Length: 266
Image 1 (cartoon, rainbow, N blue to C red):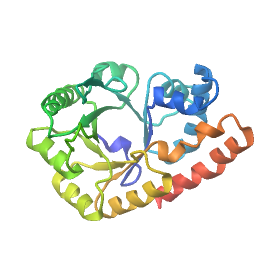
Image 2 (cartoon, one colour):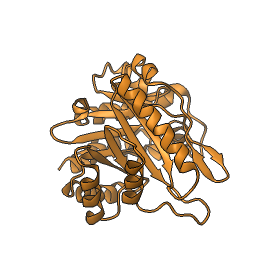
Image 3 (tube, rainbow, N blue to C red):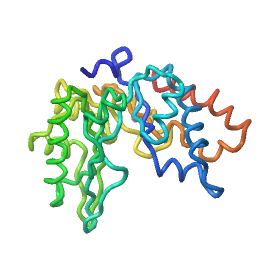
Image 4 (cartoon, helix red, strand yellow):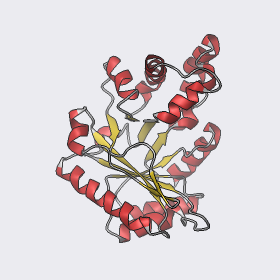
């Protein structure tokens, strides 16, 4: 069911469902861009990377109009959750925005759920319950379910490692079609993740790093059994300062962005 998101034997994917954070990135110290300008910048990026990616994770407000205007056949995911989270005494609670059926009606070939996770705090159980419910609904709708973990600290309570978090989630009965995980920290930790998830593929997230750092992390993870990547801001974040500078913007789109994607695919 998830093979539609593969290219060759890997998942080379673009994370492009940023909404408010993308607007802030483009705004910088200037005037806030119009909706039309935001959609245009997203379309510019998609035109460059679409030939190389197997799918993109998008938002319905900006990326979906950009993709549809290109008449692209690239499969895409849409989010199940609202942007951001609800803060309850420092703990981050995911709120559901849409049903799998609604995502299918918008043309999505897969569903993505982002969870802020710390297995040492009380909200862990509620987050697991939310994920298990969405996994069930996606399976019922025959929609691939991509589960993303973001680890965070609450006060002095640290979340544990990526491996420990996934292990606890599996012990609690959580399943998905593809795990989307932060870089576990080393080749040894990546190998432990690969063994832990078994036949379920896992892909590594950029996690706010620079491109060069992520490129190194991905190739370490790939050698340890990771099935692909979900490249976000590390791939394209410079557009925030360049999109109002015509020459520099075009150079980045036509030269640097393709170079980065080629480097990941080596």
